[in-house]
Image 1 (cartoon, rainbow, N blue to C red):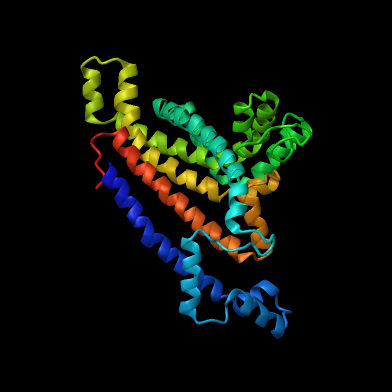
Image 2 (tube, one colour):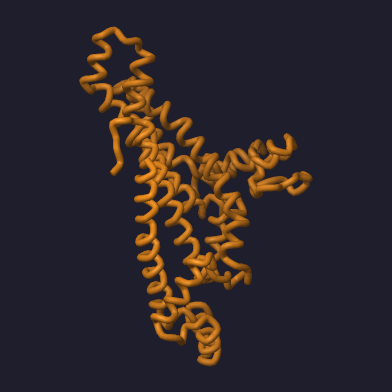
Length: 334
């Protein structure tokens, strides 16, 4: 197990190195150079020269890349051109919000997706199966931003059941230690703050988790149908083993390998795909900050975000590989 973890972490180094090189080439291949992209088409030669000198764009390519990698390895992701703060500090401030939203969306997707997928497989060919397939197809087809607007308009504006935007009602005097508002409310036993933070998470969590929910339903259904027809399951039934034991030990456990892979991939997509959801609900996380960075051409933030997401994806894949050994002892990751 430790050798597997060490091997996966070692593979992270060349992956991030190659990604950093591509990002570096991308910024410097912009039409007119990065200085013109930052200043706009009407930039004067004097302004372009000042930007090139300020950020070192006038130096040789190798020297620029060496400087960039040196800062990156030391944890310096650069400074946001819009806010003037270090990119890493901006991420540290906003990442708890995105992670909290991602956790709620994942709980929603997994908590409903696996039971619905199993329910559909158990009633394959019947109306229950057709209904689950129809709903899962609808979950993939409906755009996230459209669903977010619909949920906000119906349940927040028309019915008033949920807040319309933000992470917490500013009128609540809440104590924040970790910047995870729901967790802080539970830790400090400020139940009103915890409940309000949860209510702010419900609608964006549902909107963000709908597509992963639909995918998990379909993958679970297909995986369970494949396992149910396996020889060892038929043998277990022939031996008179109880239905609950067959379901938990023989069917669900073996069907979870592809589902686990799907959940891991969807977790990375949830973190990187929260831009539209956070924008609709004015949720102050990384997604909304990235939207602003794209609008204002804040390239240090964009580069830092892509590197950050690459690290998250690599760590998630590592957790998925390790979980294979825990779910199915027959699997040995080399």
